[in-house]
Length: 149
Image (cartoon, rainbow, N blue to C red; front, side, top):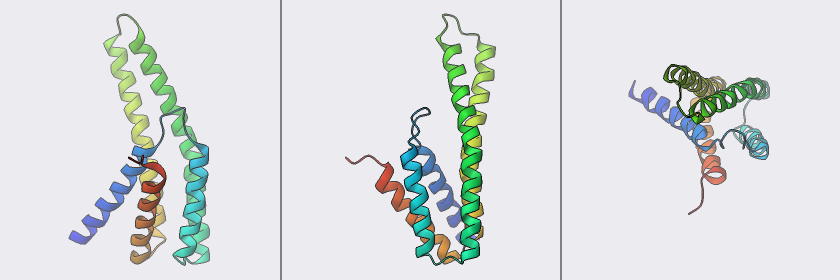
């Protein structure tokens, strides 16, 4: 039981890490996304994932990328609407409350899309492959996304 909790906490921290490194909306770096896809493909080969499972993993990624495009568009619109409502001289609190709710819902949808993708990916792997995959993704996140001080 404790092992499952630790594993789930590790997976959740990886998801949160991805969310923290997503560039601000409107500044999404497509090149970074392409690098991530290439890194994932290479990592799957290194993990010696069964070809059928590798194909299923790539299909999961493609499905999630397509779904995330709409989520990001919704999040961008929510952000713009909230900024516009806050920019007026006397913001309408009821309107702001609704816009904050919409913005939070869009952020939750983005978070959930990453979590669901990771859950689907992990379901295709053995526990050892899962651990190695998480460590590889964490290494990529640190190398590619964290600012160097």
